[in-house]
Image (cartoon, rainbow, N blue to C red; front, side, top):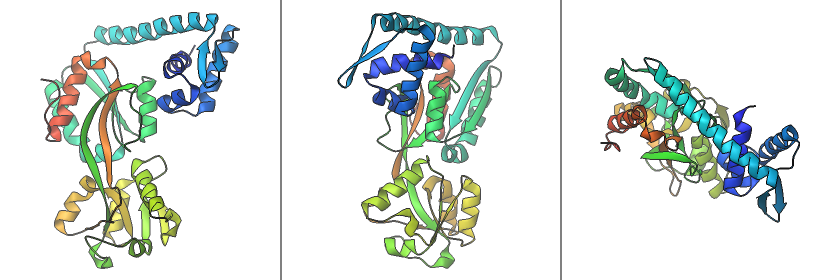
Length: 303
């Protein structure tokens, strides 16, 4: 049996409701309900009852919960023991594209120079939702993501990094007002935006909504997940974009791009190192987190 079903049961009981479990697991409430029903069908027993808004385990549910915790603990122990059988440890990393583009090359180079004989690394760039689902399902050991403040990370071990500032950028030849700009002036431009699920797009849409405006009011909206292509298009004068300042700092410093700020527009998001609780006891995790903080010029959390 896929252990994610057992994990869903444990999370639902700990959270006290399917809706809260869905938020923690980054699933829909319907998906959580379907996973619980799968377990009930599999074991031929009703596992949970609802009393108002609260969940309660049946006697069979108590038994399955106890065994689920044992199975999940054994799975974690098995993974750790298997890793110890090999000469090299493995670290599976996932991060959001901005961190991956700006900081990951230096992080990987530094980490591998210090641990080259003992660690194999693999990494992917994904959205925050995909990254968190992956680390919860143990597809990734560790993730680094940019995310909105309201995201619930209570089920994970977290290490906050400096916040990421976003900024509207354009090419100088567009002659837009700078540094402060009026929203009506921005809306006359073509916007290059990230795909749904990216925290930069969520921040953008939230800011527009608070101002009583919509994304569709821009002259045109082009959606792309290719940060390099977006940068090159903005440099060529193709429009404006709302991007991480760290991603375009070199273009701002050289004068190839101009930064624009909207009064009252939230332009900051969180950036966090995340993994499952308890894994900070493993040396490889502590080493990697220390390198991330060092590359970003911050004090290392592990001495």
